[in-house]
Every structure is written in C-alpha cells, then in structure tokens.
Image (tube, rainbow, N blue to C red):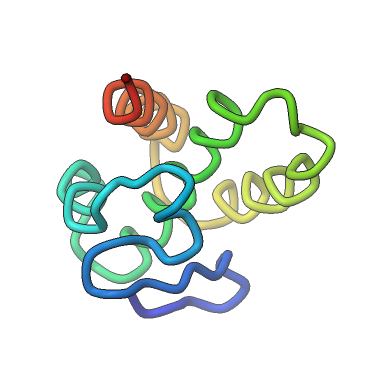
Length: 104
C-alpha cells in the first residue's frame, strides 16, 4: 500500500500486516477485501487499514489503552482530515470486521 503524507504507517508482507500478524492474525488480502467499498486507491486502503487497527485496539486491547491511546487519537485526527466521506459508517464496518474476524 502506498503511503500518503502524514498517514499512519503500516508495513506489510505478502500475506499479513507485519505490525499485527502475531496479534490479530488476519490475512492482508482479507482485510483489504473487506474494505473495498471504501475504494481501491492507496488512500482508501490506508484509511481502511487505519480503521481496522483502531477497531482492533479499541475492541481487543482495552486493558492496554494507556499504551495505544495517543496513537489512536492521532489516527482519528488523520481520518477526519483524509477527505473520505462517512468515516463513522466505515469505522463501524471496521469494528464489525474485527469482531467477526477475531472470534474464537
């Protein structure tokens, strides 16, 4: 995924988000496919990935909020300025995706 200026950075390999493969274990393609409604350009992919990471942290890592709180705050500000419409609707879809994909 190409990065846009001031976008949160995620490194990816061919099958997993490197930064989260050992944490959430969701294949990169599944994450991108779930966000296709947002768009297929690099900015839309970065927006969707950001929303998925925020959803994961806020839903699955609540006990460690003091560790990630400022990162999520910065990411949410970036999302607000991303120019993508209906951010809250897409954020809810990211939350639902995380809840569905990380059930055990």
